[in-house]
Length: 292
Image (cartoon, rainbow, N blue to C red; front, side):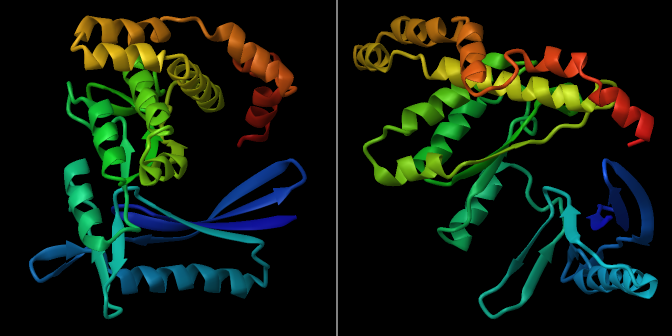
């Protein structure tokens, strides 16, 4: 049996969750719960990092009292919460509303130094925002660190990536593919080091199937981005031929890459249709039966 202890630090409360894995079955137990109350310091709201540290130790102490071993430990918090260590070792624990958009994130990254980069969340932009332009700019500035792949519609910003605006996702990958052959080695290094993450929340869809569909959408648009005729595109751009450039881009986007993806999956020994394979399996029923 394996014991996995996870600490979840939320905006208003936190908790320690113990997961016991026995064979193929996991049992989850809430071990410790506590409030997360920000404190006002010099006119700004900060997380009470010492209080949170105390609560994490309290959760660990409860495991020690039980005399149970911990095989794995993890701490998770909001993606927009952050804390920095200053030049003199002081902790700067800002509250999660301090960064409003990618522009503020870029400015902060520039002040922090070369190791700081910007993460682009596809769902966290105002309607009509040219996200692919932001991606291109961050690549050129060598500040693009990663993505949270999702999509937005009205108030929901964690939908399946590529469902609302697949053309946007395609154009983002086009910027990445194009930068991979840039003459500037620092630009190439930037896109080679991008971290990709699917950040979505599914309430009415099957969560696992939704994630499989998300990966499929990403693969589809990336494959299409690889098909752009860059020579034709650059020639049109140099000639000021806007429609010609759009045609070169659009032709790749409208290409059916399904046979290509099926062939690649088959070569890798994977199901050619992942969603159908999952639906025809008994995995979902087994998970539901275990109550996980």
